[in-house]
Image (tube, rainbow, N blue to C red; front, top):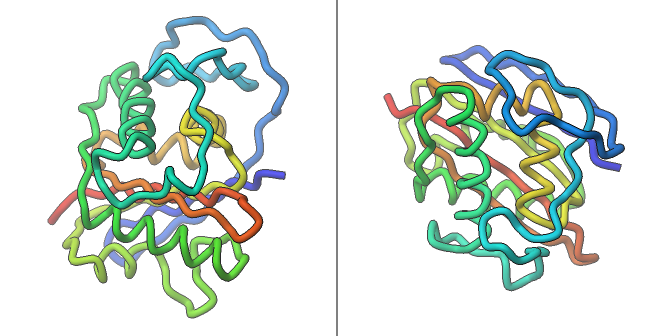
Length: 195
């Protein structure tokens, strides 16, 4: 079962929230005004909305390149939601990709699912250790989703994750993906604003 978790940090403050939305598909209007609440889950399309084909993650999907299909698809999907909310689009940052990939790989390898690593490392520390000097950051994590569409859809159903994606003050992102030895995908999205 997917258990969402989100962290948002400003300076030395951190907020950790989580939630679970209904997983049954519902009919959702094509256009939703910013601030309007829509309940339920949007059914996955027959084809990926970005490429037109269904994308399922495999070991070949794991990449630190900003040009990797998974990176580009998560970015495009998140930016569709941001545009609808009146936010500027996110851009990919290699340092945030590095921080996200490191955390996804650590969770997949060690079998935990949390913003805090077993060593006590939090998102702000990971982002800083990757060389990113931030004034604001947020982190979304997910486990088990088999495609960029599903992970972004699940994040948008969770109030904390949705808040991070639609926070217009955050303008850069990096997406990490790692597969456990059993093939379970672990996703991390770091979002930040440079100082």
